[in-house]
Every structure is written in structure tokens, then in C-alpha cells.
Amino acid sequence: MLRQNKYLRFEAVSYALTYALTPNPKYRYFQLIGDNGGDCTNFISQCLLAGGAKMNYGTSWSWWYNIKNPNNVMDDTWSVSWAVAHSLYYYLRNNEEINSPYTKGLEISNVKDLELGDLIFYEDNNKKIFHSTIITSIMSGVPLVSQHTPEAVNIYYKNSWKAQKYHYVKIIV
Image 1: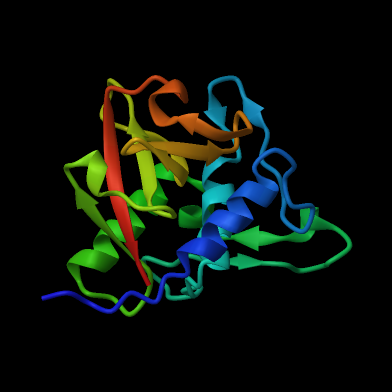
Image 2: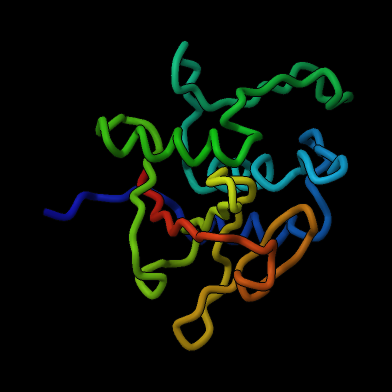
């Protein structure tokens, strides 16, 4: 049975294409420190929000970003799942499993079933998800992604970070 999906894919992709190379100054930007951190998932969360995802301020499995002072992003606060790749992945997957009213992520096995606005998560040799991207174009059935850390627009998803495994996630709002 197909579920109605209220995800505004065009809006999410439009946001991604607008801010992939020049981050939105209304949000804090997370610098890459060594091999840790970075802004990839913060950027993906912004794209999801632009696509109609609703913030979830629950005590467990939350996903949110608060702008405390519009003139100083350093005062902003956010949930772990807003900014950390493996936390966003598990937040979306958990929402799918429990049929949450919040944004869900259905993991699929065939990359060719992905659409614009869907996500790809990257897993390392230690089975840790460490990076996230959004599909902003599809060429000959192959997804091209946009991302932060490093900033890129419409690159072949395997040309992003090296990964042991890719997680293909369909977004449902």
C-alpha cells in the first residue's frame, strides 16, 4: 500500500542547490576538525526542513534547530540528530519503523529507486555512519549529490567520501 508523501522534493533540492557552495548564514556552520565533525548533516537537516519536514522537540528521538539570536548563530542550539550523520540516519529509520508522524527514512537496496531529495548516508570500515548527502540530480539513472564538508554540487555520490557501504534512504514526510 502506498502512503501519501508530503515531502516537497523540489523545495529541498532547490534549497540544497542554493546553499551547497555558500552555506546559509542563518545557520551555524560546523567546521571539519581533523577527520571529525563537519557540516554535512546540519546542511541535510536544513534541506529536509525546506522540504517540509517538521521539527520534533520530543525528549527521545528528537530533531530540531533553535535560532536564539538572529544576529548571532553562535547562540543557536540543536539536537544531536540535526547535526550528526549517524544520529540523523537512526532518527529517520526509527521514525519509519514506528510509523512516527515525523519525517521518516525508508532504507532501500536499489540506488536506481532513489528520487530527487532522497538521502545517501556513508558508512566506514567500523560500521559507523559518518557522512550524509542529498540527491539533487539524476543522470542516466545515477544519483548526483550535493553536500557540505566539502561543499559540492551535483557530484557522483561515490566521488564524495570513501565508504565501505552506502545507505540509500527514501524520505517520507
